[in-house]
Length: 417
Image (cartoon, rainbow, N blue to C red; front, side, top):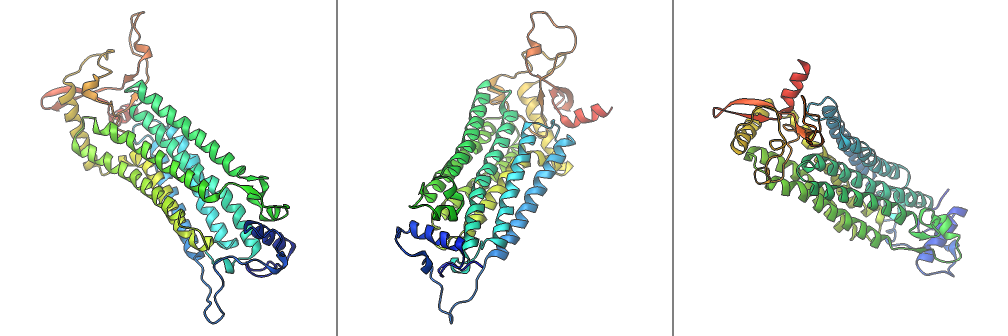
């Protein structure tokens, strides 16, 4: 049976773990059979009482999993049934691995709380438990950053739907950001895998203790600070795109307010990632017991990240009265800006002037632009088949005018008819 940290080792595995701790303290010639002292020291028997935050970790992790699964699965069901008016797209496929990674991270914390001493003081943790904790949390670090990266990828793909057809420059920005996230994931993977020389010393304290000298490793705190800072900065970049687009778009204030509310959810994810960075920088001793603050902000980060990625789709589940009021206001804006449009679409009326459309925002639950061939006969020199065309329906009765509007609810009903 493994001994508690601070006591003399009772197994061969304990011996090598203690030797690794002594190497880290610079005590290369110290005798591992006498154990190792790591702060905080265990209180005297008349003062000591057992403390554990493991029940809170297990409960909070389970609740986080349920919330994330509910939000994301609801989003996928709405999109699959096309209640949002748009097809199941790349952003929906990307949210699936994002959910898997996001759920896996709290599941790892549940396992460590049950089997590896997570949530306890170090003096209540055995050498074996700490070795297991080191292995599992090293993998968990990769899982966490893969989760936030794939969430950002899904939001980036959604932003392509939002602004991609309005300007080729936006598409270049989105693909550049997407490529950066891919590189970020690869960097995280290889940085953590090869953090120590030899690499096995990162994941096994026993293997590290068997080395004749201290393993050469990059600082955990420095690595965590750099990765968390990149995470915060990418949150800022990702959140700024829809805010800029929405600010420059002519839509009624009710619609704009609702969309701003959705983006504020993404702002909560940014705040959580920033707070996680601050709390992480203050965890220096008794890490298993004090790491719960970092976990709390990590869970908020993941939950609000998935919510921000899903709410534009789930907004179609708002009460019909609110949705109709919003749609009516948007149609009035369309009539005011574009006037009367009739007859077959031409190359000029499928792409409004930049002055009118500003950035050509696409409402997730009211507008959809698709690439489609033009019906009827086209001139041989026409390039309309190569340009995005809009699914447009005539809308009448607004200020006595007729305008054209892409309405997925109308499209849905017409498909049934």
